[in-house]
Image 1: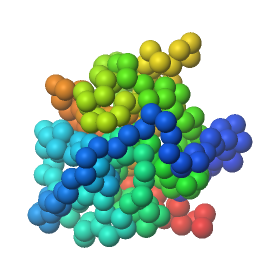
Image 2: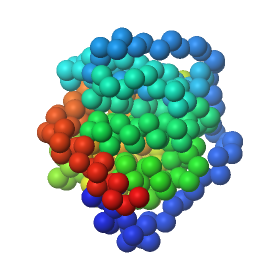
Image 3: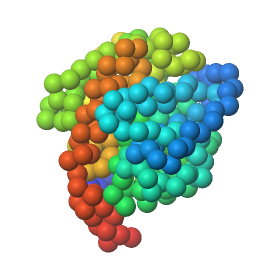
Length: 275
């Protein structure tokens, strides 16, 4: 479970899960059904997994542009549902769920695949405002063990359409960086506003965010970092200029480049000690 296991006992007590009931909620919508074709060359260095169930907003092309700007070649798979392509060619997987709140095609098998990829030295960027909502168990299990999420508060700005302001935390990967993402329906997501969660990082935070709909509350943590993962509860791809997405993805890729294969894969061996 990497080095985060040494802190889990205490953090689990102070950051008890806020679990979703995975039922339909007023204010959530889905779009028109589309069929998407996987784009697998077998020669790319990064894989985007876009989990859309055919009806939510496809952000894959935006993340593809940012990954290519950071030096990667990119393949795309839609709704793998436990059946992933051969991951041997890839050093990085980026998962995006956009405004998907169903989670019907996401399985524990997908988490098993990602866990094996991480244990083998791969890197994962996980962008999702509702993964912790549609996933049974909230942050307990894979999100805590692999992504460094030790607690979650669901939807503090429920269905917000006001602009989301974010800033990197002091000393974090995005220290000194900030931006604004438009929240109006149709500006980023086809049928939804933002349902970003507040999370409690097990070790290293990433950013803070707020929206007008949050009310009197202060900026909330929206991301966390481990040795070979970055998790975020809002989409940098919602910047219509692409600049914020390029900045964030480029920073994450640079960070992973500083982790040697031996260093990264060693966490798989450490995790095995706690099984």
